[in-house]
Amino acid sequence: MPHVKYFLFCGILGFLVSCTLSMPEQELTEHILPTPSLDASLAAALENRFFTKDQWPAKNWWVGYGSDELNNLMEIALKNNPTIERISQRIQFAKSQATIARSKLLPLLFFDASDQWQHLSKSGLYRALNPDITINPNLIDFSLSFSYEFDFWGKYRNLYEAAIGQQKAAISETAQAELITATALAQSYFALKTNFIRQDLYKQLYEVRQAYFNLQTKMLHNSLYSKLPPLLSEEKVFEAAQWVYDIEQEIAVGKHVLNTLAGRGPDELLELDDILPQLPKQLAIPTDISTELLSRRPDLMAQIWRVDALAHEVGAAKANFWPSINLTALAGFESTSWSKIFEWASKTFGMIPGLRLPLYTAGAIGANVSAKKAQFLEAVYEYNELILTSFQQVANLFAIGKAVYEKKEKQLQIVANATERYNLTRLLQRQGIDSALNSYELLEEQIHMQLTDIELLYEQYLVSVHLIKALGGGYF
Image (cartoon, rainbow, N blue to C red; front, side, top):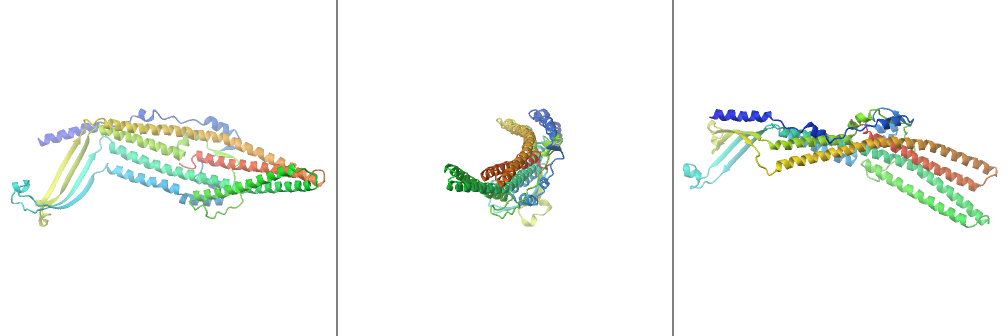
């Protein structure tokens, strides 16, 4: 009879092992959008002289700007930025969760020891059946216990794979945090550097308007002018002074932002020279964007791993429909006396195979599967949204980059023309043919053109940084 039970048990196991649980391939992919194409935008961009074919951005892409200041700030930020440090802890958490999930796939072994003292009632079960038992016995127990649940349905394998997916997602999230921090720091750095130039131009503008006002005041005193023009000029002087105050405020705030991104206090000394970083004359774009952008962007890869992890969680939830089969065993020594605890007669051992089949759970298992599927589909739709946004960003930057670089090229000519007009007027003024007032007006116009030129220069820096970010910033 024991042999019949043994073979029956093995037969049940064999039948159950033959069953498989998995999430169907169609169910995994039916809601995922196909990879968009950027062929048309790429071809249009490469027809423009401001774009060129090149490799994907390097991990240390900022080195291409040729600024030691920027390189040093990046090195500090990637080590000390609190956001990066905080998100990087998710990797350690996910690793620990994966270790916990993997433990379910392995047999577990424990050592147990106890010394139980108890006063036994004379009328109780033990002494009533065996009056020779001492009234105050000790029950000493040393044993090794073994437990293992057979993972025939892939429940724990799926949970382990889900934990691995979350770990990989955490790694990609950390890379995304580094990319966001690095591009934000580069943007702040370029803003600060161009604001230094804007500050000088605003100060020049203030001096020009002040000189213009002083000249008009002298003409008023000599009865050559009415009172109205100097009043209007004085307002423009005040306006220029306000612009100087505004740019000083922007520079102060910019320094605070730059220090904070670098993981330093806002008032840390920040010494920057007046040299502008190198600006790429052409924006470099790889030709295999449509095929490789998914694997090059850390935010997309993080979402892909989240989807993968949730798919495995659905598989694990489905496994709850099937029986759980486990084996428990123990071996050790048990005695009422310390002097006999390790004698062979005190040995004890046992084995307990178990099977638990859910027959009625009031819909809890099915509801859990539905909940996991809902989470999976939510992650899929989030991925779809992210992939469309990502490809849109790249396509937008092709158009924006073309426009900004063309505007900057034309603005350089506008500045050159304004400078030439001013120089000609100055020459005429020296010869007594033109007035100083006209020279001041043309000089102010030239400064305004230079301010527009600096703003476009900053936009060029932004386009180059944003394109690097849209292309994944060297992540692979």
